[in-house]
Amino acid sequence: MPRNYDSPIRDARRAETRQRVVQVAGLLFANLGYTATTLRMVARDARVSLERVTAVGGKPALLLAAFEDAINDGEPLGLIQRSDIAPAWAGDSLGEILAALVTYVASSNERVNALTAAWSEARRTDPELAAAYHRRMNDMRTAGREFVTELVARGLVDPHVDPTAIADEFWAATHPTQYDLLVNLAGWSPERFRTWLLERTIRLIPPPETPDGATAT
Image (cartoon, rainbow, N blue to C red; front, top):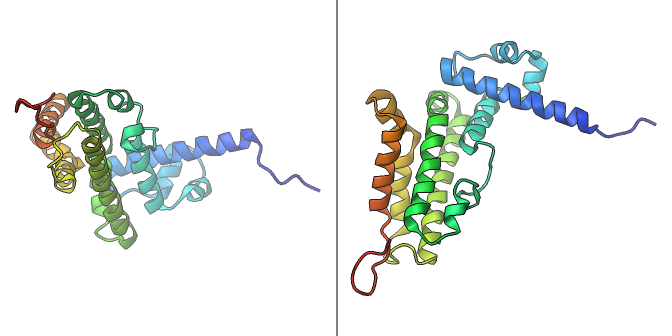
């Protein structure tokens, strides 16, 4: 009777193939756009068969996987648990927490900028991707609101703020299209974008006032 299990080596090879296919698909979507990219192109550049590509997914699934891999950068966790934010979160400095948050957001914007453009193109003709785009953008908005709510609960932010209103403004400021406008079209450097975003975020998320009326840091 044959054994009904996958060996660790086979699992590792499957994961490696999946990663390579998704990375190649992401590069093609980013460079050529969604419509111009074909699964045969993905198979050719990934140096695998078309059957192996379709086993990973069709074009919509590959686009979504490429976006998630790029924005998460290997860490599919909530904002607070990310290794690039958690150390600052463990402290009591609002400035350090916001700096870590903005550094992550600016870097992720750089990684997903072209993929966001491809997704925007695709959702005009693909209802599945249009719905997925709507869900993902709302997830980002929700993550921002939860982050601000946690800051308020820790006493690091003015308790009178409206977390939803702040999250909406932060979500709009950190949307990848802002990076596209300011870096790709206006010619800003990524560092200038990060500095601008940090200054805007600090103004947007105010610390509580101290008993003498000064602003806490």
